[in-house]
Picture 1 (cartoon, rainbow, N blue to C red):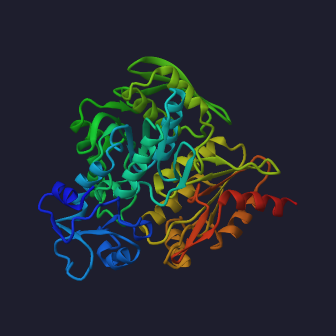
Picture 2: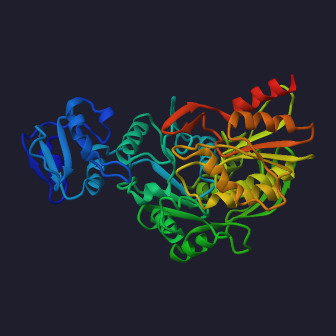
Picture 3: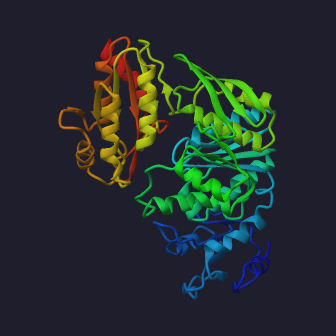
Length: 482
């Protein structure tokens, strides 16, 4: 595509310099292919305009920048636009026309996005589809397995992935859509065939100024980016509000007014049998997922599948086929057969769900290990302490991903949430904390290690260090029980 053609798509764009051929576009100087355009995006932390010289050095053939930037010394053809982020809304669909042609399902909410996405992916496979998945754990399609850095990739990366999926015959992409992504316009240019609202609870207030702004960001999936059906949890107060605006949505929950609700749930140590009332009538589902809170995720995935026209047999089969989701109430096999679960719960509601489930699953004591991430919402720290105290026989407070905060300062804020009579164990070193937790266990006990889930690293300062709760737990069993 010629630079003039690209500029002609963008309102008020001005091309300065030769009309070069553009081989592609990126907003990451590390991914520049010779002759590609570099678009300078201003984010919440960094500004791409500061990296234009690096882009030129790395082989960019064209720069797309904001008109307020002094482009006279760049030494490359330049397209000046009023707003580079808004310009992407027309550039990306033009450069990656296949990206928006496949079926897209978007899932948003504070908790349950990942498990619901995995359930819907499993249902899609059972329906003989070729699904792709984009989410918190990884991006995967065909033989591709790409670890995720964020829940929803940036717009250029996202369109490139979707285009590549389409070239490899992916016919449906299931995507976790974060509030950050919606607020920052990362899905601009895409329209979803199904949109799922899970819930809204205390989280990300280090980014959103308040819960209203957080909800408004989530709402955008349904008010700006949805061409198909909405699926909404009406047990959640924010979901009830959203349902007023999206009146033709499929609803799920325990409410007698919900379109999809569990008529009965039977559980044992390794499975659930759910009788589900749906717009298609009542049918029975079997699931390997642990915890009654998973019923919400199962109802959400069922609603999304129905909205997409997937048949009931595939829904039943797909839900039964999913054994577990990495880092979500994931059992840790070990040499002594101890009941150890690793869960990603790093916010109050998620921790309460996980610990309530652990309490129901345990025939003995429940031992909990958790911490809180640094450089994130501090208000949730004492809230999580109170929840851990409520459901646990023993609590070990440790480090999560301290990032640039002092781990001991984070722990101090956590400890403020415990009652005066509670005496949690404090061990800032996470590996030692896990070893302590394993050492407390007797045959009928259950240990839950919360906060990091699928992550195989720990962020200390600005660096990532190898660290996997599952591997550490297995090692601790060998060391403590030998």
